[in-house]
Length: 384
Image (cartoon, rainbow, N blue to C red):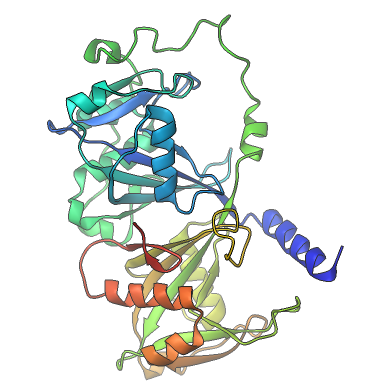
């Protein structure tokens, strides 16, 4: 094993040990012309059989948007026309890794399109159109909060930033947390929909395939990593960049400039908490992250052979606002991580940053000047 390969292996093992890996998933909200939303029955989940269409991210998916399209093609047999990202919900759970759950709007389906579904019966055992109130009761609580938030908020406010289904950040300006609907699960859905079979609780025990051990199933799911960075500017519009201490691994000795921030300790903190911690550790500042300006998905090599990492990454960019001379003069760099900081005009920042980090920084700066939620990006550029 070469020194570089051994080094990469040690970094990967350290990442797993430190809990920096998380899962990713994507679902789709299909509305109809009557204000209802599509839900499906999961024949393999007897505890929580009602869900919105979608599923887990695959390393060959170039983005969560691609995951959403692929899952609908596999589950329902047609290619959806996706609209904007409705929300990104980061959830923590004591019994599994955290999940970055993306939920997309789709163009409304006509009754004819819905009647032409060709579902994979192993994945979809039925479907129904539910009002927001009905969906809030039928979906399991965490998913119910997520979907209900998207249905209640103005479309122009999206994508919504959620934590465990609850609004955070600028979303609180347009959507206050509401009561959780009473969870009823699939009760009564067979009376509401001709496509929801009366046997909605699943096949008889003798016909059911053996269940995969839950821990083994979760252990086999692919992982991503996440970073939280903060955009600070001075009154002249210059961006605060920091330079990382050169790595010891071969190929890492070149100067590397970036926005303040770093990896999310995914098993113990949420992205906003990570941004707050990283700024405190790197700059010595105690400040609250502002608006979420951008969400940038960086594919791994399975989806993009030119990627610089095997592992896909999700980068949160928060607004740090405008900082003055007094705060800048108080910077105390983390000596084990950083060697210098600099205020850079956009042209200089573009020269110092790699293409994707500069593109996402430029997108975040542009997002400051418009209302609504964060920009959805892939490798720094608008998703689509």
